[in-house]
Amino acid sequence: MQTLSRAAGQVLDAVTQDLAVGAARTIDNSNGTYMALHVDRLTESTFSLAHYYGQNGDLVCDPDGVFLKTAAGWLPVTLQLCTGHFTVAVELDGNDKPTGWRPRQYRELVSFARMWLRNIAEQQGGIAHIQRSITR
Image 1 (cartoon, one colour):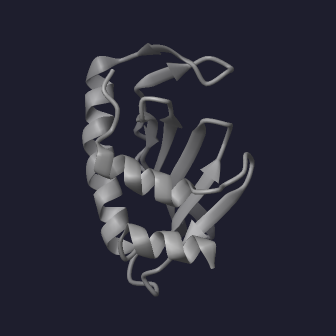
Image 2: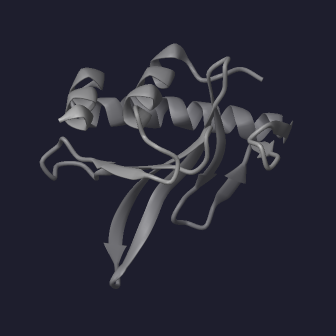
């Protein structure tokens, strides 16, 4: 199973930097031009990235992706869209170890993640700007 590209991994490293298990952060360096990025550390190795918007008084995530950090690099695990579309590409056990994967869905998530993470970096002013905003 191939990991995400080095460039995509650098964006994930930047947005998840020093985030404790169970903690969350919001990154919004665009002054409201783009949707803020919400990052949650779910477990020791899994992280959720999401954008939210309000609809009829509720917050709706679109998209919401879960990523796994491994020694080899980052893997996209799941993706949920507001349309109800939910894709599981990698199955994990209770210790965040991959136990199975769906090759077609995995390729789709790799492609989507590459585009989404590139957009996040551009919208948030680049990796260096993301890192500075986190350490302030």
